[in-house]
Length: 201
Length: 201
Figure 1: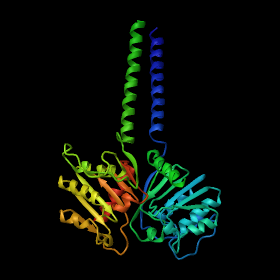
Figure 2 (figure 1 turned 90 degrees about the vertical axis):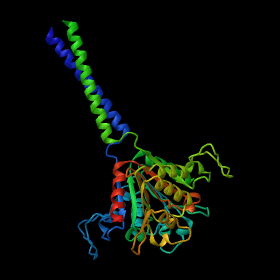
Figure 3 (figure 1 turned 120 degrees about the horizontal axis):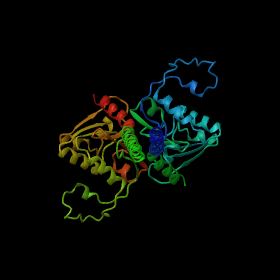
Figure 4 (figure 1 turned 90 degrees about the horizontal axis):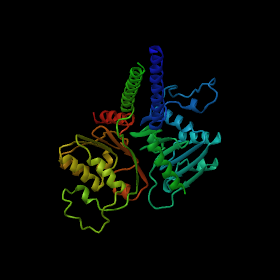
């Protein structure tokens, strides 16, 4: 009799443990998606070769005089932009950086839906890449108001937010002291998704 | 005998439950501090009276012609800045907004250590509040390089980060489309704390 009841007690304990463990897993999933990315990139970024990020032929090494190989803030930013697999929404005050333009073109070329919102005054300046994006068939809209669209954020697949002080310019990337905050935190991403939709319509 | 073993089984279950519950609470505390704040403020902010934020006399209502009472992006930002109880570290490219200056002076007046890093070119323009802060005894440093210190972030008590596209100017607050991301997420706050220390030294 006592063996039977010991077995029953052990079973009851095991059931209780498994139930609470499941509850724990569900709670953790709700509070924080697995592997939530939180990262901060600071600029200026060291000037190195980023050719390998765009090349599908690793067997043909780049022969440019820049340093090859090291990961920098710019290469991290380019990788995040190019990780888009379904949508890329950009809201960028000044966009003149050729490497970031190349990344957006690469994303567009693989069939990702790209939408660009920018400031009308800065879209017209020399060196702006907005014309290049439009020529490639990317939809780029300018605000029509007299005030500045001063945001500098990107939404990758509606789940990854890149935002901060950095305009997508050569000065921003190579000279200024700047930051880009990278996060998948839903409480931070959601408002930016909603704001992009509001500004786009 | 069976009653005794039923009681033992129940006790075992209760102990198992309480142990796993404690484990759950400890895990949650480690993963996310209680009440971690994540908030996004968008601008332009509606122009309303913010006098009540600075006044310790609620019995004397302000008689200015602006709307009174509604919470706006600016009032939220002012509240976050004024919540500082031990330190306030500012890294702001352009600082000319009188209300934000008033908030920083109020924080300084209650004994909080305030440090300000700003861009040397913009510190000298008409309307800059850097001189006002210095006259009040606040330590404000300018970068000595030829490039721009383009950050726009604040660290409240080293635990709350306010960062985004917003310069602390009247145009930024009342006209432009801007964002300020507010977070206590340690993975996002820590890099900004380290960057501030690096730039300050």
